[in-house]
Length: 281
Image 1 (cartoon, rainbow, N blue to C red):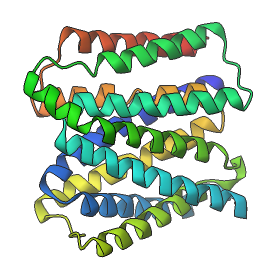
Image 2: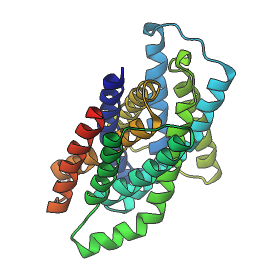
Image 3: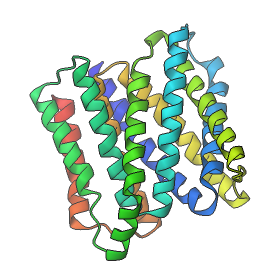
Image 4: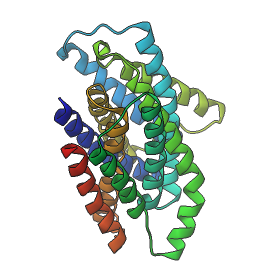
């Protein structure tokens, strides 16, 4: 059961990283509101389509409430992350967001009475080091852009950490319904916010496949995380999930030709070692 939880968390991490990469690309071409609304909406549609093929579930009002609250926090976090990725350097903004999310999850997990093993704790600490290492950049102009986006990245990480904590509170019998509640709240919130600020809510046609792809990967990551956190410790599962910057920077390297410093490569290696330590712990 524990091994399955860790595997699902790693899959969630990979999916989140790819979704964030696509979200960042789409936000460079379309407005942030249009990307968030349509990515969240595409994920919601995919979950609704899959419901008839899933085992029966029995969500309670509390499950829906936690799901709705997580949707608001997660939607704000993702929107801020996409904005940060659009104005800053992907290999800097994503890791800063992840560290902030890990800290929130760790504090809450310990407060709830979780006590990971010593080896798992070592893996968590190494994971944080890995996230910090992959955030290093050598270009002055990139450093300035990253500094500009740091407040957004930190705020995004706090919101995403709250999202991870809230989903943990849902019951195992609720199935995927908390995610549906989360997506409905997020979509409605951002449509209303977009209308109030008179932002364009329709992405450009050339960006639509990227937006939909990012939304599909994001909801897949949410599903993996929800299944993982219901089987394992919040502090551990959230940490593994928050290693998503590794896949983000790898995609940035392949697609955008962003250079990886030795420190960033070391960070990816540390992430791999951290996963081994946590799994073996």
